[in-house]
Image (cartoon, rainbow, N blue to C red; front, side):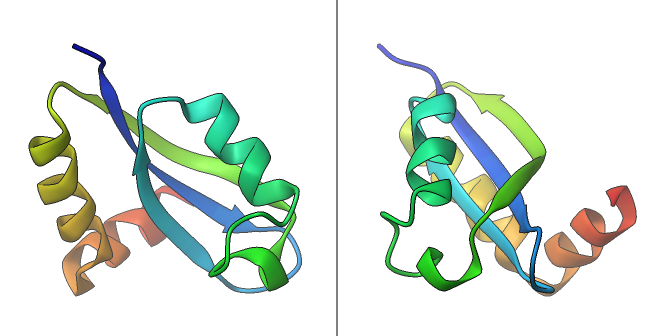
Length: 80
């Protein structure tokens, strides 16, 4: 069973934060920075601002939903 990561990346060129989940954090950030993500392509390059290791995919999905909510976005803005 693979561990999952919930992560937040911030665009270096625009005021944009993206939240996602993956089982390979390094690969996923490289994908975002190389323009392979549809929703992040126009906002690259990015830097990782937050990551959290979570056991199961369903748990990661719940945490991702939280970080995409209003209160979750406020949490991310505070750590910037």
